[in-house]
Image (tube, rainbow over all chains, first blue to last red; front, side, top):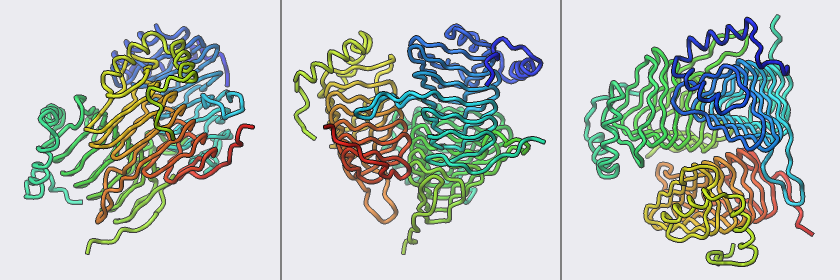
Length: 193
Length: 193
Length: 193
């Protein structure tokens, strides 16, 4: 996953912004400006389909968001010294929730479905153990279906797809469809020729 | 599934209305009148257990609702030229969400549990494919348990039951109990003798 | 599960309260006082991380809560003559919902994760059967992961752990980790030596 997405105004990004300017509506862009006030670093933001701003619960971490779309009910919870990064062209659908105790990174052009929960920690330790915190990485162009849960230490390879309602406990290779509880490989996707 | 439910004022329907007049309370009926303003065609509506109106996100489709009960947090999203139909005697519990890109039909006397999600499309296509949109049909007297997800192309036969938290990816015969992720047949229900 | 938790001001409880006084903040305690007005019997309450009060839908039952923490979106639904009891030191994370038609008891020092749903009834009967209502008991120090659903008749033994997104349909022995849909035993936890 590249890290230079912020401030990257290539033709592709401009194309996405233009698309969003057409589709997001004036209201979405005004809400996006309000949302920018709550985020230290962000690109062009659009808040789709409703007046409610996403909830930003920043407890002393770092949230960096590119040119992104947010739907109502999204919530980002970033713990002390943790990082949440979301690449340009990605959007988070309704009620998506991200909890970062250390690091949750989402690449470019990702589609995060409604009610998805992404956490890099279980928030509690099993008795006699230390709190388990392991970064989550979602690479470029990943599509996560509605209601899926992505748990600590998972890396989802680029261009992969997570089925609706899946509980993802292990990493997923690139160009792979997974589904189930726990999520298992359903099939591979061919590389574009 | 019969299509003549709207405006159908048989004794059975009047009985259901009478029951709802007793149980829904004045507030539920007043909210139902407000909700009717947002729907082009609807029967007697009752909004149960709270002041919040269900959210109707009609993007140029057709939403037709019979004599129905809605709980707080229900959301109907109807895309351009799509159809959502809900038969008389059915109710949608808390936070149920329906997304229709083409057609979602719910029969009469259905019980849709809380947090149920029904979608006739994944909303995105796999790379190199067209967007997959396939109508969902839920026949009469179906009971869908809490947190279940009903996906594109599924038809649930009349009098069937979907267990809590199930992810339903394939059609279900009549009088059948299914559960799991993906949902599988657990057992058949006998016809009433 | 002991029943004497209410009004029990042992050193351990005082320690928990002190911890909560430090971590919950003034706002959380003020909201806790407002929440106490809605509950007939309760200890020290803290409403964490937000202004919204939990929703108490008491239809003529009995809700008894010890020294507990509640997060935004929690909802307790207690039917006529039903009981909900939550022991001291326990907390309910965001959007946890409890539905008691007869009895839901949660012990001390339990951690109930976000979006958990606990119901002692399916709320409807299969055709030709009576409504199935069976009490739920969650013993002390149980940890229930995010998005899990706990269904009628389940007893979860003390010190057990339920994985995220699990659908728990059968009882769980003490000191046991379960996960899946339906939840199955993953492993046992050793007793502390």
